[in-house]
Length: 235
Ligand code: GTP
Image (tube, rainbow, N blue to C red; front, top):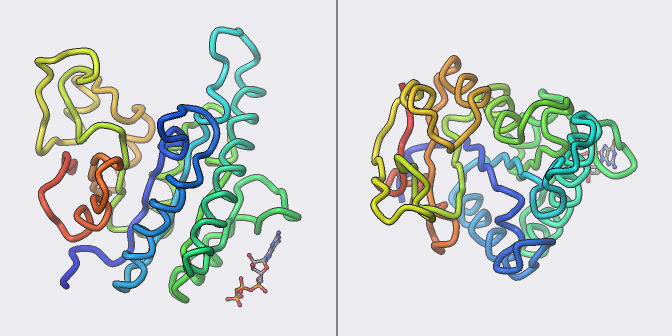
């Protein structure tokens, strides 16, 4: 099988791990995702992963709480998800290292770019936890940043919908899906697929993004094979 990419950055939302429940971690889902990641590894791909935390903590959510505190809680939520995913990956035989942008060294290795790259070269899956380690930045921005740092060739942006639409397809039956988009279109049209910081970082560093539906089994592999699924974003 020929692949279009060699080193990829998979971005999973926290909600993806929650499955139907919408909250917490569904280990059946974790296992399913882990098996799909294993397929990538078995085919020689290097895989970095950034996972969000929305299944555990959704930020300030109407409480008007201090933004920095809320974001710190979100970073800790990503750590919980990262450890759950590591467990599922190792259960199916994928050697995995969790690196953390926050210093929590009893739980995870500190994030060091050269160490991350070495892990990838040695065939380990690498999960980047704690976002960027800074408040005011999303985990999508963490994905863009890590992708740039490790020189990933693409960001695989796993969603609950099958691509980018002109309006929310969950609420608008006439929403139109885009097969291809430029970064600047996302910014100009204010499409709610990634926040503008993450989109700009991808644009400035020329990192393509594939947005696809994670709920369809086998889609991660299809995305890296270059099959026409979801929406492809580049310059
Ligand atoms: P190499 O240097 O390529 O051999 O990588 P390695 O990760 O196998 O070696 P290392 O001895 O650094 O790590 C062994 C195990 O300890 C791995 O599971 C690491 O994730 C873990 N580990 C390494 N450093 C830390 C740390 O600072 N904190 C925690 N919690 N675990 C760590």
